[in-house]
Length: 262
Image 1 (cartoon, rainbow, N blue to C red):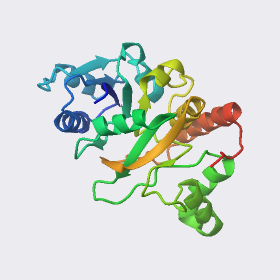
Image 2 (cartoon, rainbow, N blue to C red):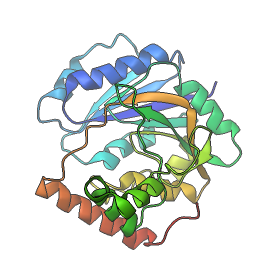
Image 3 (cartoon, rainbow, N blue to C red):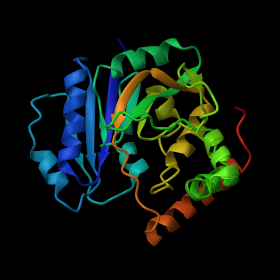
């Protein structure tokens, strides 16, 4: 099996982070796994608790940052430490129910030209999450916001954006890999410099996917699955909404507003 590493960037919720870490350790027998837990200066004391927690496994390394540097820069904090063949970028609300990291890494390395992949994610109650997506465009992002209220053409566009008009029961190429659960070839991740540090939050995963697509293909691998609680921040928060708009503007300036090739 290939040498693997993984990173969780945490911001609050000690119990949730511990559940993710313990599920990874339990279901991943690889002795040379390195699991990084990066605390992004959690205001609730989560970082101090994590640093003092004995997970009973030397494969865990906890790093505590002095300030909240954002999702992407939090993951970049381990970039220079990586010696693996495949690196996993994981949310703290991910829970494994079987050994998928090793076989998923092996699949990625065996697939000619493949550079990144994501598994099929489910809510804790078993419902499917529609996270594989096409390349974002202003129209598709607008339709995604309006589809729950207005249906019609907005729902049709959102279904297209989230690839619900495709057969997602078999491995297939995608243009937007969710940052909730990414497997990326470590050499590619390091070559492209990890996440763009200009993004604090929102759209950084779409940006990273576009960078990776310049080096290889990106895949949905539904033969592998995991649980994702998916805590979505409500857009009633004006600050978060503004941050999202700024990130989307940066993304479209960098990658253009046109649709992807598939």
